[in-house]
Length: 325
Image 1 (cartoon, one colour):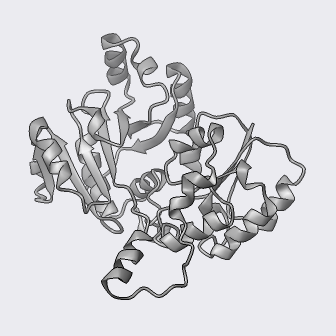
Image 2 (cartoon, helix red, strand yellow):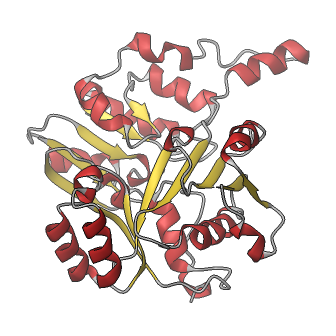
């Protein structure tokens, strides 16, 4: 059985299909964790790094390594520049912290296949204090920086007209506050009605070419329509949970929810409350990643949109309750 310690990524970690004996959420000092888990038996402890107070101070991570068996700890990193710098990750390796990832999908694998030093040795700079000068120095500095992998997130309407196009438009506007982001729709031209020239459309044949030209983007949002899912690093399946939409969906494919098992399901344009969502999960045999109500696309700073993006792992965005509707 496993333990989850979460903060910003509480919702994301809640989607993991693993056995959990205990889960806590909030910000904790290392000593808080020591006091809670001394003499507590567990298989692996999955720690959302933002749950550790002052986690950007690498000495705090050293304290963590001195108090826990690091072979039993998996760190889910955030996407802050500090944490993803070459020096920070090099220090983690020096402290014997080998099991770290930014991908929620990698956690079940690390539970059964923990890293050894050999797996993470490439992150370690054995001479971090050496001066870096001229072009050689610049090259070494670049080599010591960990490239943050581009996320290509596809959106697929499961029920008809579940709102992928408009949702992508809103997500892009909010992501642009903190990320380099592109948006692309495949085999459709609905983006043109937003009067935003940064939204691009392409048929399938040209979509791959477009994606190849987005190398500078940290995030690419793709309205898949009938395009292939293989061009994306992750897929979000949108369902509008109205009675007519759901009944029509099931009549067309009675095994649809079997096919969506362990997929990232998001309810969009939803009027369901939390209890209704639980009923939906029970009746469909599925797990809902997030429940998005009907939203006004004209609102520039929408709390629910940002909460959804933070649940997806975009932690540079901060929810300011005083400035949101």
